[in-house]
Length: 522
Image (cartoon, rainbow, N blue to C red):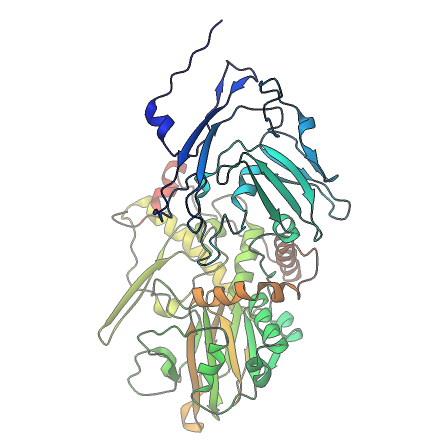
């Protein structure tokens, strides 16, 4: 039987780097076509990759191969008689820990690492950060993920001194002939975005593990600062002591993490009782647990409060872990129509409309794919959107029951840590996780003055990423965050006798349940 393939001149003259396979039926035999191309020396294009071209390397000859498959997509260079015979023996497998289970993956098994890991070849080739793949000046990649072929023959795999591997890619798409990629043990065995494990807490837990860092240690930026930042990651709440009585101290403390987030309140702001206050925080009244600036699209991530004066009777600060409330609901849920599910379905509008400023944002109390929560009753808009039908009423009542339970898991005495800040104290907390408030105080009995500042999520995350290796050194090896959080949540459920929180009202038709919580116009 004869086989014929038609290839357009446009294709043959193109600089595309995709791999095309011309196979005879479903067999293993295939044809390899080599297309030579010359890259103009004056080009500085950084978009879609072109064979043989790296921006800082001048004119080079490139090639496009249409390669067939081999048994394990190892090197399938032509044999001496010119045919494409595919044989695993052509590969020099220097590592005794690596095997190729199929055409798409490699498997690494090391006695000291426990369970074998499987890595996709495409992911591995895309992850190469050598000076050819990543511009050493800008730090930007010289190709896109979709530019990497899906069929990637390997010439050799060997071990590196740090426990990683070195892969020699055969007929690479980016460089002529072969390409050498080295992957550290961290790249292979750990997450590329390691996260410091979170510790969810109740009042007793935080009192036992209360950590206070001296201002001088924080400002030194070494061990004390790393410990404080680590506690901010794990508990979302950390205290400093011996802070100088200066209005500028809060700026110095914040700048150890990064630039301040300026809002319409200013770069910094004062929490003091005053008449006709534009914010309830600027009164002496009780201020319930809440999160700041939920009416902004980009609410602050870290809030800093430095106590300059506090001689009033009352005025204790209160804190509660919203992540703990979230995780408890997650553990007791039974199906979608439970508290956890309902709190992910209805967006609440938060609003500020005073003194020429009008901001609003909509947030669900719990968001899938995020560990943060949104709870700020003082700043909820009075009129929330709702559909005008019976199913919507049923949905609202179920949501209300779930929200009430969430409130109980925040405000119960066993959950709330209470502390009266003294002059020289400073508290830093995760505004997207830890809720804060204040007990009522008698303004006539003395003075109470806190200086505040915010740090954005981007700035905070940047600091965490830059110091991730030092922060991870404080994490016990083998710690599994998901297991750790789930076990702690179950501990609290058993400790406080929390029962299942199924929302028991009359049945809502299944086909309308998703729609009933939607607001008008959506």
